[in-house]
Image (cartoon, rainbow, N blue to C red; front, side):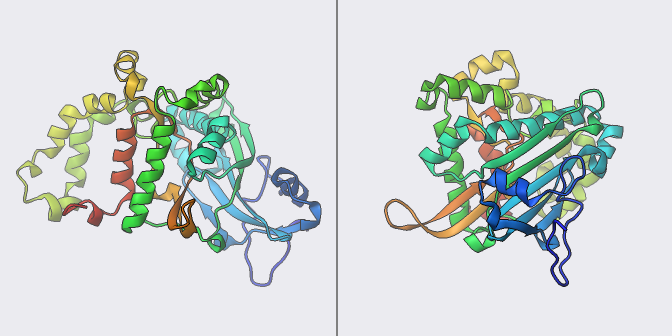
Length: 341
């Protein structure tokens, strides 16, 4: 009875549940979103607005009759096949992932997030509610949920598979530059001691999904082996170069050192050396974590492209250059990275 029935509309009943498996109530949604209960007599959550990913499931929820929306994410490790596979092959990653959900909850609730959006205009959807249930004795019993501000298509927001639009590439780079500058070591943000301490406690000491300490211990030792298995995928583009035959070995010879230098704040000695470059980084700036909206009016009265950023699970302190390198290699279409792109 909680879900309003629509003819020929399938709903994501398996997602729109609390961490214990109970259907969410309209009253819960109204309370957390700050909406009058008259606008939340029921809700709809069509399959079209849902997704089922490796590490989370989510859906768009629309309250009725008010029409307000939110995005709901639910994570139950024991229900996710990817987590079951990690339990067999890389169980240490489950505890890492447990912390990542705590990181995103704490960052979204922080004064730092609020100040960043207010002072730079970078859009980061607010978190109306988060349920964090970490089970350190048995990580597979860990459960999490997030009720988030929604960036909807009818408000002009959209996503890309890979960024090939020049203005969107520039807007994304501008958004990351604003974040990096706002939190750069010694910036005025740190004048607010309470906000600074809150941020330090909330996020990763060394941010980034790809940093060595977040991955398997031997990842830098198997580069050559993995290249030998996968290199034929790149034959058309790379086989004409001299390094085609030994690229794997060459990369492996420098991989570990490059990993440490690109993420210096995981190492106490490097941390001190790179302190003046330290800033807050998104940590996973792939295209799936970006939304764009065109045709909005900025303070000067001209139209611009707005950027909305989501999924701060791997956010923490790092180098702006590493964050941008990650963005270029995981979010931008290859056509923008050649011939002067």
